[in-house]
Image 1 (spheres, one colour):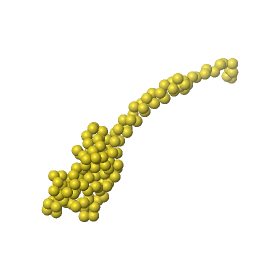
Image 2 (cartoon, rainbow, N blue to C red):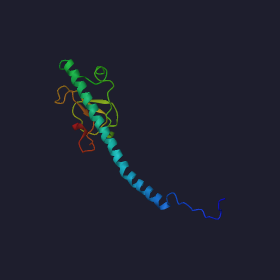
Image 3 (cartoon, helix red, strand yellow):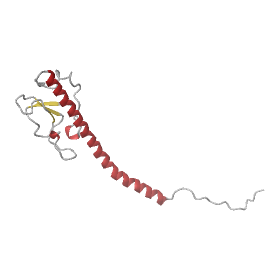
Image 4 (tube, one colour):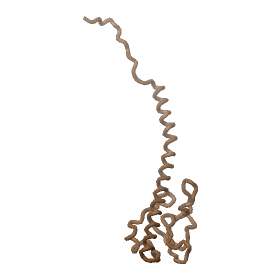
Length: 146
């Protein structure tokens, strides 16, 4: 027979309110530090994708030029699609994440979106493709210097 007069020991298990509040505060501090860094890393990856897409476009223009024996594409639409289709977007935020190509006579001198293609065959930059904005990237460099 068991004795029912014995007192049962209370086991103290679990966390106190103070311990839980400290853990929540630590998680909050870590989140406050990590979220801005995450946003910055996202923008850097967009800039990297923009550089890669720009390189693809420049390669396609170069192939067109060599296959057509010294003739630059007039624009980057119908005749150019067999070299690069679809036109990749300029992913960096200041460039608008758009795939539009603006034909121009000189290098971009203002903020814009998408790409700029130099259609003036007498220009020093004839046949060049630029990111169509003078805005700066995360390192402070103008997008036109890519």
